[in-house]
Length: 108
Picture 1 (tube, rainbow, N blue to C red):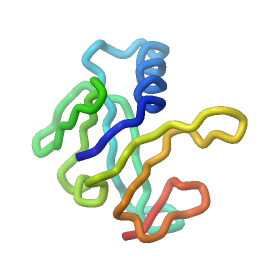
Picture 2 (picture 1 turned 135 degrees about the vertical axis):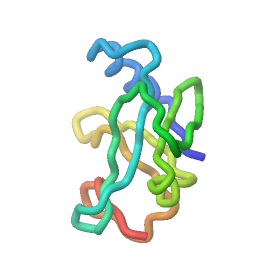
Picture 3 (picture 1 turned 90 degrees about the vertical axis):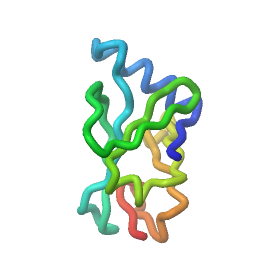
């Protein structure tokens, strides 16, 4: 399962409204090759479920991930850190053996 913190949920709802996205918009997360640690996180808003997608709902927010990425993200919590030193959306991934300083890439 992939979960979302209350802070991440509230920020996502705010961004969806600001960007004028449809009411059925959800968070799509994924993994792609790249970054200084080998794999990079992807996060976007979407409203189309694709074949093979894994769909989760946490705190009333729908989170969707493709089957391949799910293997790297199982158990991950999506969080949001704001403020002057905030990083924005953060992936708290228990599967990552190493992460880069910016938190945008990882290795398993």
